[in-house]
Length: 431
Ligand code: AMP
Image 1 (cartoon, rainbow, N blue to C red):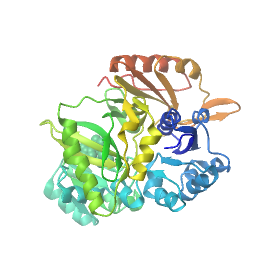
Image 2: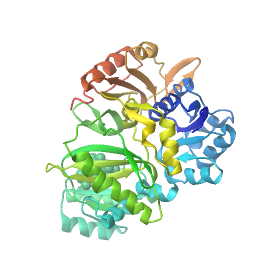
Image 3: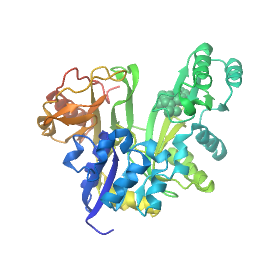
């Protein structure tokens, strides 16, 4: 790959800040621009030549805007962070315009865009997953729930920003969830098809792999913390922190590769939907030690990505470009020894109704802590000051020779930062 390449990163969170920094460290890359980015990605580069940021975050992530930005920036590689543009066909549109883009095409992004599609693929390919039925009529859902009994999991098939899953402990709760999706239309089209499945018990883990349609390269497994408060209490969030590598029993990663990742890629290829991009397998490891597939995502998780990127050395751009071309070159990167942790600093009121606009102080001091990267999520610049502009404000990411050292570093850095109402979990990687 020739050097002095330019990369366009699409997205506005700490995930994209982490990707942008890792891409900027790549030997073959001379320039990185982020669309629409945030107050932190400015230190890497912002794709604003076309005045595109004025379209707002939602507008910035539409397929048309992404292609417009690529036309202006003429990148050698486009890396798309969030799922919505992938499911909407951003990669297909970029390819049609002559750009190399990392991420699945629309047909392959169905793996995340439709849980019904995923479950049917899993059943066809013999991938271990919770037994399920797919329903589109409320009467069928109700009858099945009564026959099956509780506990039972009710899932909207389409994209619901992580809110479309109810793990119901009573039949009444399950029936209410199904009614809200199928009758009240609480998730719009995304809830018109519903999956009812058995509840699995165990420990969750995320395994991410870079895929070129046929081959894959597994990244260090990660674990995230979804609840807002310590001890996994309170409502679900986009993620309050993550660490990598997550400890997995010996031989388990091999089984995940053999029983889940390989058959997923083979099944997608058979179906004419070759999967290129990052495949994120959300797993439940049962008390017997067996891995089950809960879901596939088709992009890096946030904040898992921040922890994983802290462990990547070498030329990430070369790896992602090779996958996008269908010629995976895992030798482009190495995985650093040790561990990394991402700690989310959130705005008051997050997740229900975050209050924003507060000035943030201590960012420079935090960045001086050894091994620490201060990654921005919901931030903006107002009258020359960095202010909060979203629920998840920052992701303090630290690498250490051990997980204990990474934790210490992240918490030391977090203590340097302050803004009105800031809150974060004290137990990332400790529970
Ligand atoms: P999903 O988006 O399908 O991964 O579901 C979101 C979350 O709901 C998962 O991370 C699990 O915590 C939980 N969940 C989903 N499916 C199941 C299941 N079959 N059994 C138990 N918990 C589940």
